Image (spheres, rainbow, N blue to C red):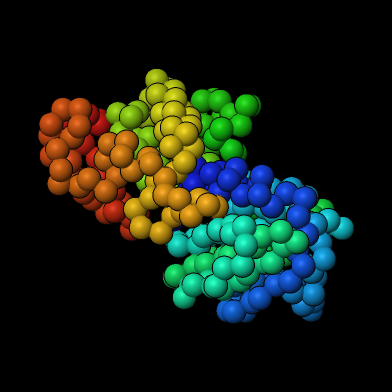
Length: 273
Ligand SMILES: [Zn+2]
């Protein structure tokens, strides 16, 4: 699933290609992929509008259109958005094609859980999906104090707390496991048991792992691609995610795999306390 670094990479790679372009035609091959303003036709509404902004909030991509509309894209498991400079035949799982006055953008999604929601720009951040999101971990004003406050309300495990988008926005299974490894904290610990020194380490680890993920242009296991169709590189730097049963890269112990809050979690029993 695209997490913060992957959506940020899609946003950065898509922006120079589509900003200032106009949507001149649209093909919707699988209508449930788009959610319009109630009672209005999606295709009719986006037609002839210019793309004026691209932003990310948590794992959501926001594409601002002229005359006050915004498309909120949630990629969920396997959604992807790829730009082609010229006409390109839709692939098997392409659900929507936006034809621009130059090039086109294909929205594809194998598992079909992703959505493109159209909302008035003025209300974009008030839509239920965005309104309940916790702070942005890479925002200038996000600090370990704020992280501690966000976590102090949680009674679950630290793994489940960090996956909760209302606590902190943008983290998923990959970057939570990686951040907890770098912070030396066992994912099954109760959130309330963390000491201030551990919250500080966790804060540093979250910022470090997300920044490194963005620098590597994301993590590709299967489906994730940036807007040019390229894979990310962060899978090569993973310490624990996807490495259950293999040796810890730091101490050599066998990494353990455990279900926590229904999610497969990998950690080192020696490096993480
Ligand atoms: Zn280890």
